[in-house]
Length: 125
Image 1 (cartoon, rainbow, N blue to C red):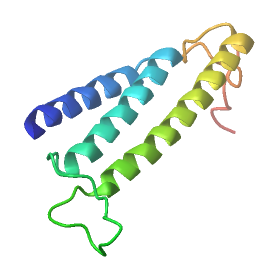
Image 2: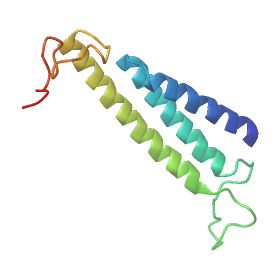
Image 3: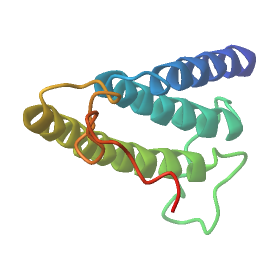
């Protein structure tokens, strides 16, 4: 099972990098989402994928009996899901505002700071 998840993580990383190298902001945004999911699966896979009991301690005991699952990967993934979702929403609003102001989602055509008709910086003195 860990091998299959490792292959899926590799495919997600490859697709995310391919999408993030695009010129269109929506594809870049989808690449960021795929990258976040790939990292979450990577953390989940690194935390040993086994069917162990949850780390619940009985009321009359001081420690769990037997082997229990490590709760750290799940806690890290939950935190990463919240952060990646808020980052996704921020980038989505930023891309939408850029599209409203500039009229395009192509990053090569977003030349507000460097217009095409501009001669560029001086070549020499």
